[in-house]
Image 1 (tube, helix red, strand yellow):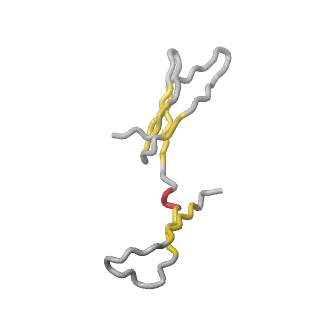
Image 2 (cartoon, one colour; image 1 turned 90 degrees about the horizontal axis):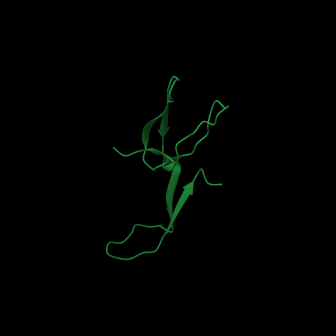
Image 3 (tube, helix red, strand yellow; image 1 turned 60 degrees about the horizontal axis):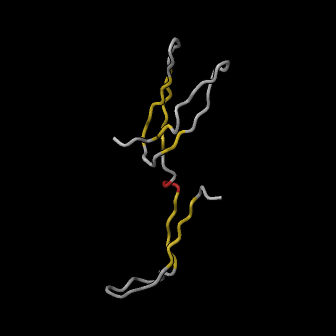
Length: 87
């Protein structure tokens, strides 16, 4: 099974603090992952993460196709991709 997230570095909670921040990296796979944390002498915990694709929000359409395309005849047309998430 493909991994959906990767932990970049081990998280270390510094002395005198109660939490640590750390980076995760998505792998491009869609699915669920469980991130767990534990330490000697304390209760561990877990968090479920779901990764999803933004590709469902892409719109693809063509330009320059005003008639039927003849068989075995090269044609030129424009292909547009509109990403609703783009800035």
